[in-house]
Length: 267
Image 1: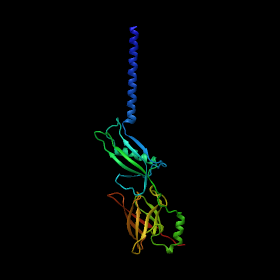
Image 2: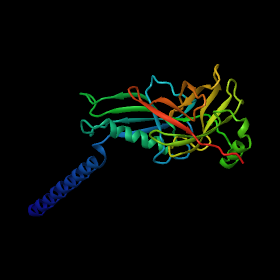
Image 3: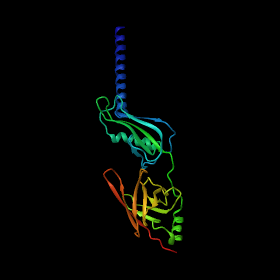
Image 4: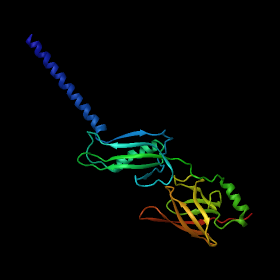
């Protein structure tokens, strides 16, 4: 009897040790798979839109920066650590999670609300950001390229020198058209995208608002950058077929973009 009970308890102890070992392995595997990293939590505030493609340029702003275009908040994403999160990490890795969520929810803009660095109480970078989308459609010139070419040929003798097709140099070569347009107060011409590989700019998108300057052959440009903010500059064209703009690409760097006019041949 005693021998039987001893066998029973030994078997039970062996089973218990095996169960504890199995549970330990499972917990360790779970930590390796999920617990060593941070977790992202999303709180929606509006319906998500169609997902953006991988190359879509989602713009990032700090909390104190003003987004140039009117936006609405889709939702808020928080990236935080857990009890098992390992110390350190990189801000690039955590921002990657934010940007992935932004494209997945159809956002155009990420506006950071807070960022915490690793310290004694928190083991990893922590981020909170609002995901935004543009509220309004960007002004677009709806004219087929062939129809625009026909307009230029038909009105060749009466065109303003600024009107025509202009090829722009720079990091991403592009082509714009400029045509008379007074539908906006104070504007005499509009520059619009004809062709570009820059994913920010779709065909027909407004690129420049233009008004005549006080002197003949001068023009005042409101030139729109990739974040849709504008820069005012004066262009002295005279009888030339080119003009150059100094476009800021960062606080320390300026890019020179030269536009060359395509020659028009009369019928």
